[in-house]
Length: 207
Length: 415
Image (cartoon, rainbow over all chains, first blue to last red; front, side):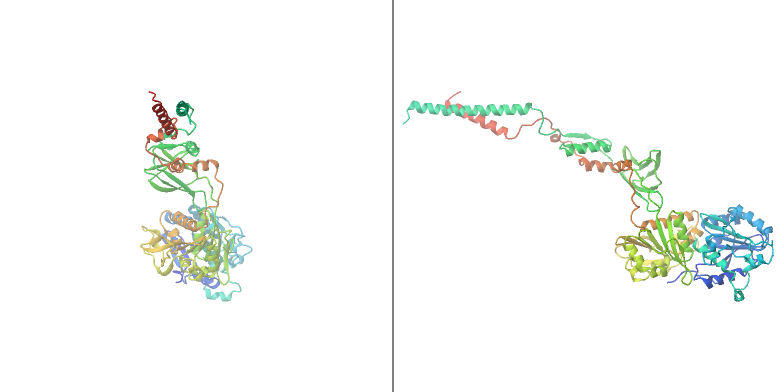
């Protein structure tokens, strides 16, 4: 008698406004990484889950990204609030990599309305050691280093914490662009740039 | 040869002597009787008969018991209601107490601030610490107990593989106040640790295992932990762990997995929406704590100094995430309660304060009264006879003296 169902399913949030499906290859790439580095029983394909649906509660870790302005509906807002109360973790990444961008400004506002204001996450937080070790905090992306977007290397991620656990993790580093490629192409990288994604998954599954 | 006069004188002397003895005996008996009748009471105190309308206070009860121990006969009557209350700390973190009371009519629960709740004839409730002793009132009868002992936070260890079930059990226990260590398997020879990595009896009250691989890998040490007094909870797939060391201490076997009876938590018992490792072949010395539509779901068993529990429900995290209403709180309470049921021993002792000891003496006032001075009795004339009594030997002596006097007179021909 083995496990009944896959322990982990990568879920991408679908919201009414904006372009929620701007990075479709993140899911297969992260699923590949989780299967490659860990023994976590991961489902081979991801799911797309509406942010305003109770189905959101089936997935305690959900990824959300986009370029365009984000305006949550009342239902999305209340569902996200309840999702956090129950122990879910929403991982939001700005696909623009631009702190003056529309996604950034509106996403911050919506997260503050729905849950609580985001705050800088210290760079020695356990999420940077949950599987791989990132001694300097969040790994930089090629999009930061080549000057795209706001031409900034963001030193911190932001988070809303609840009872010592992250319930919303926010990144301006554009991991959505960084991880949005076919997993077969990892072989061309000297260092797998999705490793921090594994840390996020392990953190969500253990804290 | 004696002369007739001499013989008559001798006989006269004998009769005089006999008469003197009889008179002396009669006089002595009369004096003894008079003395006994007039002397102050020294042979025993008078019996005491008491009528109660409500149970006496602990002090009054102690006073009566002291009289009984001093030899005094004390009897009582009264239509006192049987009433008893007990309190024990909830074996979970925090300071809550479980109060159980039994009486013969509906009961009122109160403390020094006022009424807290009402109870049925025999029921229980869980309370946060109260202001002063908890009092159970039934009519004019009052029982009290003082739950002042503070249970310290308790420590659990979770073993398993990285996954939602282990993670949300840890979350639930921590939210309920447990200190939790964890060791969760991840990757090749990798694991995620929180706190200590191995169960230790001196540190952990309960170990919860969430998968069979972890359970089988640590079977011997887990069995030792349980036998030595620890609590072992095998949850979900771990309930089916087949290592011999575990099979020797578990109270049931798992033969099959039952799919959830419903896909939705809405409108159903939460556990009906969970997969179930169906328990069977329950040992004669094990206890079935819960079933789902007749299928054993939770079985517990004492094993030497400890306890082992198998919880057949799997993926209980879905209850917290997908359940209705207060599912977060219910899931939290569910795991804290299960851990508390199997956790090692009682809450570690803390000194009871003085008034707690005092109040505990009134936890069952009628039973305490019966213990102190005996059960109630009907009114008995002999029990209330007071005053001095003559000794039993005095009657025959007086009778003999009167007979001697009568015989002496007959011989002398005296009137």
